[in-house]
Length: 424
Image (cartoon, rainbow, N blue to C red):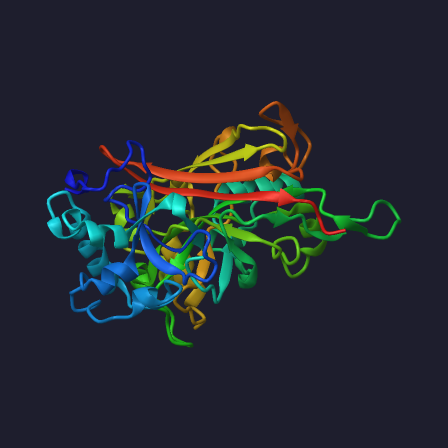
């Protein structure tokens, strides 16, 4: 059983990164900008350097023996190798980190080469993102947005219940957690007969999302079958798809979001594999009407991942929680999203990401963005010793997610970003 696994590495109680997790990322040693990026997995408060593990000849299975995938500066090559390589890597790493395996435990020199304290490293974007798609797959978020912008008559457009709605985002502005976010400038709705507003966004928002990371892709013109889709998804990461609501509202008809979204999208540095999430599978919401055959999956599942958003207001030491929700509320699953994305023959590539859209739940405190929490700025919400309608310069947003297992956690760490003032 997974919960019986134990590592010789001391993992603090409550850690997001026990031996049951082993999420993948890419790091560089702090203070050495010339140091090459290195793939790693997280174990407790350490990073296990996968290039060092490979150099020691410890990846000796058929998929990974002799492979250079962990000597790359991103995870893309490893992602493209598919599930046999992923499972082999996970099994090897769990074995060499386990409490009763001496190969690392009893070899101090090798241990020191392979295990690096997280305090000595900086995390980098773990993948080269060739393409980024943003979906709109939470029914609670869709309904609330419809109420806010269209009124109660038809809060959710009829097509929403037949297909996962999405649009192509901007891959070049996907950044790793900890990257500052410069407040965007753009146009907003004119007041009365005036010209449109132009200047710094006055309605800067976070969006709590999860990003699915694509493994092996598909040939142009060849869709991915719904029941094979899981084989093409390596894992999940936290995502904050920062949004300028005033820019978005003015520009979005008829072609959808553009400058209101493309200025910054933050993902967490550690990618949690679907294999690690297996114990937390749960039934996805029942879909009415039944989806068309290409979206009807044999295993209609989500994952039970509690999620939180915290804001550390400018000039305050402590962060305050503003949202508690759960990935399990997602109406269209990540496998349905991928099958829909490719049904027209669109080709996906290793390292592409597609995101869920804002993950809101049914409760008032489970809404995944300030647009919903403040009902588009009509009310203030308490944040520490102050209140907010939208984000202010100096505010830091912290997303986190953690599955609670029997005696262990499978966590995502944090996804953070601090708002800096707009360029003059």
